[in-house]
Length: 111
Length: 113
Image (cartoon, rainbow over all chains, first blue to last red; front, side, top):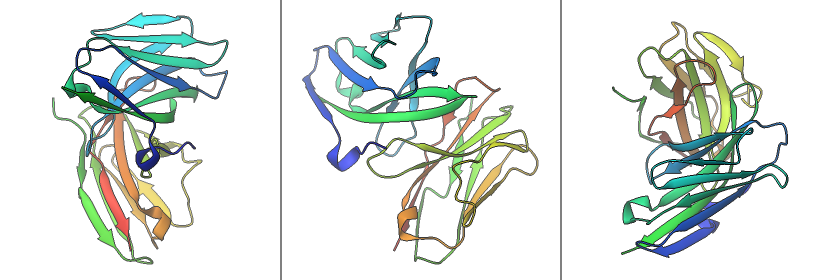
């Protein structure tokens, strides 16, 4: 799997900016996708999900875009806040409720 | 609503020793998962229980790892004997039913020296 952490892809933004985190998934049979936020010392926390019959879904300050043609997901965070600083993972479900996590991205928000 | 509880939070052992982790899922959640998260990577599923039955243990190294959920509530994950490469965070998650949202516990950080 991909390595993050010490060699984590990192996105640095200023408070108030919009953030876009990208993810490539591997299995064209996956029909459900989830974005998780993981803060230091904590387990992953659900942010937003999307099914394969949709290409966009919006939540509070977050939007997920799905491009099945190129197997690509993105997470957009509007008006990024320091509390958004964390590692973000996308996950796909290639099988019966089996979650496969993708590459993580560290988001650093400067005040 | 109380979240998923795990203990211990941290454990340091020497290689070839054994270790056990405990998980208490959210009350009423039928499905329980154990994940291994190596530093710098996303969580990897080790085993999935539906009540007290195993649904998927295809990625569990069965020569050294074992897990049980005897009464369909709490679960334990054991490693015996531990290897250096087992150093990781072990996450427990639960969901109400199959295909429901998974809720994660804080994890147990294992260091094998």
